[in-house]
Image (tube, rainbow, N blue to C red; front, side, top):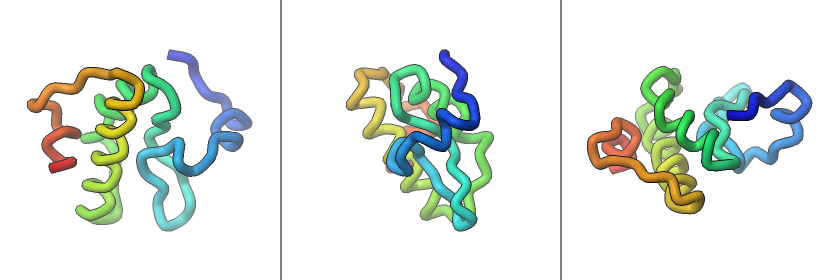
Length: 83
């Protein structure tokens, strides 16, 4: 996976992240297939401000996975959290 430096992260639009917290910090980039796989794997390691925020982030990751053709299992925590 290509690592994003600070400038590259800053240039990504907000919709390229599964979660943006109330302070505006962006978490779990989902702008390409590699980052979607990483976001799905790290979903349970991310602190969310609410259950609703976690559900929305999970839905965004699952939608990005479909968009980029990333296979997720029904057993994956992110798929279960998306409902």
